[in-house]
Length: 188
Image (tube, rainbow, N blue to C red; front, side, top):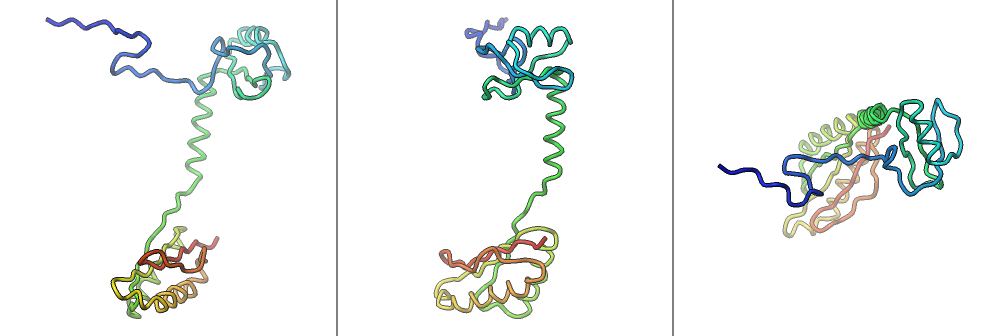
């Protein structure tokens, strides 16, 4: 029967156990400072010695949390640390929910695209722009069709002009390798 071996290096955690790193230093983890600037709701704001700030936090049964360690002196707040982490996580979640992810939809043309195909792709581009997505339209040149780059440029210019009411081009069409590309952003 095999017995578990003791951990040879106690500084590293055993497999399967992950030590969480705290984003802020709290209470006695705040080291190397003689003075701190206290801010918060239920404390008089100002500069206090570190020992006095710890005593005030202990009297209130709360934690001394270092908010801005790079300031001179470091800024600390007296608050319940778990509540502080919860509020911070909730605020980040709200910001993430409020931000809209912008997708880039691609539309590909050939230098001699038919009128029906052009109209079909134009309709899709309008829908993409109305949904708030960016549209990357490009003309792909194969082999010797690079000789028709004027046709490709005219096609993209016409495409931008037809989409004028719901989107605006970010730049003029430019040739990158075998592709002539234009990016369209939705109008607000």
